[in-house]
Amino acid sequence: MLGWMESEPQLVQAPSFRQLGPPPAFAPAVPLFASHRATLPTRAERSGYKRRESHAGLEPDAGRRVDELGAEMNRGIVLMGSGSLQQARALFEKAMGGFMGVLGPQHSHTLRAQLNLADLLADLGEHKKGKKLYEQVIAGRTATLGALSSETLMAQNNLANLLDDMGRVDEARELYESVVAGLTEACGSTHTETLMARMNLAALLAANGDTVNAKPMYEAVLSEYMRQLGPTHTETLRAQMNLAALLADEGDTSRAKELFEVWHSHLAAQTCSVFHTQSGQPPAATL
Image (cartoon, rainbow, N blue to C red; front, side, top):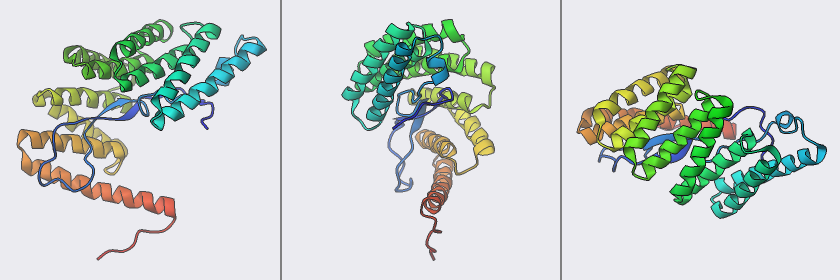
């Protein structure tokens, strides 16, 4: 059961990947990371509610109702993560309507529920409905939090993902560029959220043949992840694989192979580390 989160949601990667074509013949026989698009865990905004914020100024009955809706939202997030999308949809719709009635259309909980539902609709391919909800969330967050709030920019990022899925590449690119610019101004050019947004933009460019602009973005993101997170971090490995796949598509097989081999060795090191942490035992020695 998910509890009540005390921190605001952060922009993190989603398990939704953009394919750049089949791996070259020399790629290791392990799952291939394709270019990631950062939204939130799954597509849903996995965030609970601040109790002190939820109950401020509310009558006891209304406060209890908010708690109930929060529990419904958390159940929906769990169901969405397990693939029960229609059940999750019903809970998100119930939470959204309930929050709107108790707290109003621009309260953070109402907007959070709308974003969760929009993400789910995007997964279901109901693009028009999802787009409308994203736009409502962006308008609401811009009005209450400002255009440079990370939550506003996060919603814009998710809308850009949807526009790309709809084949509206130019609009998606423009929005991704806006998100990158906003996060750069608000958080700095090397902040992890900014780096993830830059990865999204690079993935869009690469998928549409603009490798000239995508490659230096991948290289810059990879370099910064190496510096901040180290060579075996998941985000570093993902950026490394994205760049290797792009180089392979360009025909630079020598450098792509080198990156694949480094990626494979670091992935193996990460796997051993996870095994050791979970089991409490060192990995078996190999000759």
